[in-house]
Length: 190
Length: 331
Image (cartoon, rainbow over all chains, first blue to last red; front, side, top):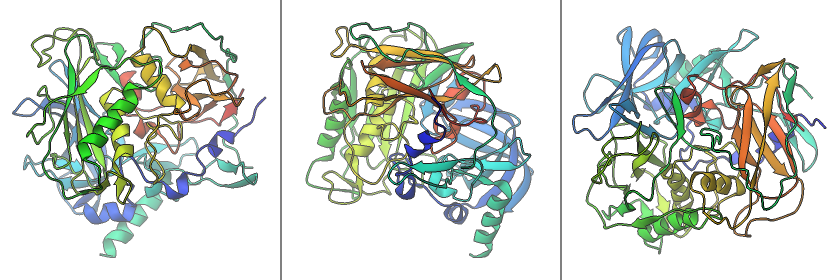
């Protein structure tokens, strides 16, 4: 028996008031506010290395900046994330996702407090909106945090078993043009 | 009802009724999606501790934290959270509390730090807590405990840092419920990744209410990582293949949902579906499933949990993301 879409109902009740055990979701506007720089960029290369104390591994990813959406800077930047693999060990931080060369993203950034001329992602991982292209040709961005992106409506509706109603499902993706518009609006409103 | 692209997706027939007393635990690695993965030199393994090699302890940094409120001491809440996992059915975990420590930063140092005042070099605005795990990529790596690692994916160190800028309550009197957050982070400490099963402790987004008990999904995950020699409850597996237009689907969220009111686990465990992700060849295996009658569904990992939330899965198989261009199907 096929019952499409019922799985969506499993999480229907959680979305309207989702908080998080790991993160407190931040809106695009809040991410824009706390970030010194926002860039649309694509990864060109990535490497990992221990810190000087040999206690923490960081992954460094070089990005070619396509557009600065807030702030300005070089055409090539390096973004540092916690975790990675180096010299026989792997460190992981749940929710922090490595980039591969060629991947595109809209990045909410701050200068690293370590003064090593790198950027870090705002909100640990929330400021990393990966961009992908749908079969329709549309580009969508997703940071894996439902409450921060509420504009997406693509192909699924939610089924509420309590009253058997269907409602638009707001996933955690949004059209990239919508994302850029919200960033620019938030920046200009400051 | 508006549907997505109507590609043909097929979930191959599976074993729906599990046989009590028979534990079909496949020895193959990387079958349960719920674990963190270690990938090195083309081999994929599930991250976990080896409790037989050296004592695993957690060490509390007692520095006074102004962001903690409530009558119960924070260290007791942490201890209770560890006990929750150690008491899970079918599970053998050996972790104890070590002496308090003054260490104030995360890192691979042989100390499994739990801290409410420590900061990191990374912007953690919005994060309630962060768990750093260090694992070996193979045998022979220094464990920081006077020996060398025994296998790829062996966890050697784990640190849990609560965000000093966030408020936590030890008794539910206000702020973020410490035990709920701690239980989730300890799941990462033990080697679990996020789960796409709503109401699982390892689901990355939870309602703002205290939830201290593990779910069936959490128990399945942890009991596969750390199986007890004599299980409290016999379990089996459900396996099959997810395919679309004849091609395998990678990273489909496949879950088994009970079709009965049976409660095979003790009442302290919350009944939920039990899920996994499909492999690059489309096969899946939901392990640690207690006796019951199940309906099985495959759904795209496109929200609320997405590829971004299961950070180690796609990279472990040399992919950047999972496949989501299909709609949910029940069988």
